[in-house]
Image 1 (cartoon, rainbow, N blue to C red):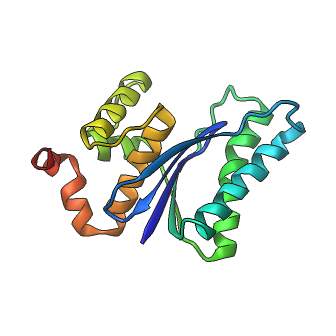
Image 2: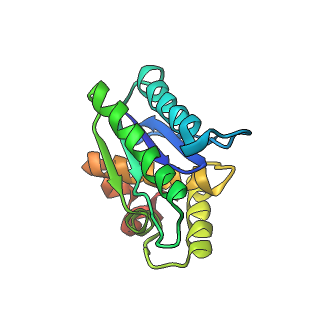
Length: 173
């Protein structure tokens, strides 16, 4: 089974790979010059990504990091944050692909053993764990997607869960 994990944002982290295998990582930069009002171009790009993941990569499960909507965000930022997720959800539903939305703290706790770190500390810990596993994310967007991908694999496969969690991770290194 091929699993995709998405850390949705203007710079979207993507991790795709077979259950329990090794993820392929990349970043999709949704920033564009002359952006249409209400982020229409970005929303179409993310829908195109969802289509390619399913049609070209054979993805059969998608995990998305739960959108964080801050009180201080303006309306357009909130629209983009929720809109990216909604577009992936709708495309996946159209194609019959299950999606799970998972909070960032849950991902960090699974991948590093702690969900209570400050942002920079969490990003560094996730990058370090990716590299310890032999994965080479080029940025924190890819690292976050890789950690989410690993949690999605663990949720689907009890065998992967037993070897990927913090308790048994030391035995793999």
